[in-house]
Image (cartoon, rainbow, N blue to C red):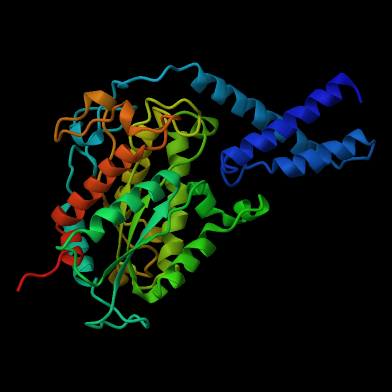
Length: 388
């Protein structure tokens, strides 16, 4: 074997290992490379076997993908952790402010509240969230099942929220919290579970279903979702807005599937990432964590604008998705924080990689979630115990 052959084989082997580390999300669904497949093709080539034109093209595509990924990794590695990034939280941006051509506000045009018609639709949907029996029929002895969807950060934070909620005597007794989020299962894994299975991992939807069954809940009882997602290694997807558009599209696929599996799902509350200026890996650093907030906003804006494949209203056509609202907005500019509250993200809030929350960071998100279900006009309708 020549030195060149050895180098290429090692490159592909390293690519396979790196892709596994990042949950296989080097590229988007249409362009994703199966590096194990590329290695097999390369081994056949080294043995002198003839390759088809399609196989040779696939091999070249794998090499290019790895080189692109190496560049993104090196770029992130060169950045030192920062206590703040100098970016303005969406909640602090006005209608006149701009980030890469985008205006401010969670809902756009500087607004942190949904447009009036969408808010009224959300309130109607919230009033339909009632305790339901296993068959989905309203029942005074039924359940309101709330499911989390997302990756490692999401499951860590939701479990902390579950602990707070267990001690919350204002929570309605019918409310059941199921952590469906899973480590390593970022947005593309949920959108394309076949890619997960090709890597020898369990389909996240299968795990979600098993957790629901283990808690003695039926799909018909799931009525609320908290979804917090990101893309692993977003730098490989390009600069803004490209990586955020891919995140938006993956989450849209996930939302449609959620509605098809859970017929009584009424509302999905969306959140984006916490601050990632302390990140030491390319998994999901800044400014990608910040920019992911626009992906969530675009989804809600698309639904408000009447996008058919996100339609939540049976009066206007086939229902394809739950009604979308912002959940708690979790991003603040590190230790600089944000204007409308005292949220800051400091070093003690992160694990060693600067990306995942420490126990302290998990509690911060959990408290934001708890405050949200107590204060949001829609969430408190189904979460809080009704006063006599």
